[in-house]
Image (cartoon, rainbow, N blue to C red; front, side, top):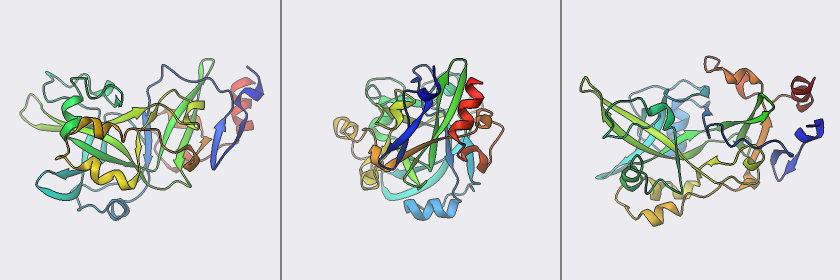
Length: 261
């Protein structure tokens, strides 16, 4: 592989990685960022305040608690709460599969036992303002940050469920739906998280709408013209590092030197 293979160019307002190796065997949407305070999140998504507080996060990882927005069937008000990232179906005997259930494929969620009931009536929004993907170069993995416009808030299409643990306590968990990539994300990964347009929030959240075919129509790749991508430091590879520098851009020349020299 040459230096040119990780060259970059503009696509609308986005940054693409030309000819970078696409990662087929890395987890899709396994890290993301939500760097806004709780009050800003509530105002942006017009939600009722939840009891749990939220500290801005820059390196959210699976099995950690994350903010989730839901709507009660009899009360059309958006409510913000926290759930564990990694879905545990209500019928599960234990929680061992949670770390592997952070994503649900949009194409098969309606038929998979773990997700089909949730797709019908337990849909949610998962707020974020960036997500990360990795490009494999030999044995190394270079992380990239993906944003909407200049890093504005958006929402992943999510599913949730609740599971009773051996002690009798209810554990609420969630997963992020994924779909085929757009022109920005395809340079790094063969999947991307489903990002919903704001005008689709009400439809997605309404648990009274159980028409799966209509719901699945919302699970499309996001408009690439509204996205941008840039390389970030590999310090984000560690789940214990969680600060603003996790999503700070690095110069591509620096990335190339680190990977090839």
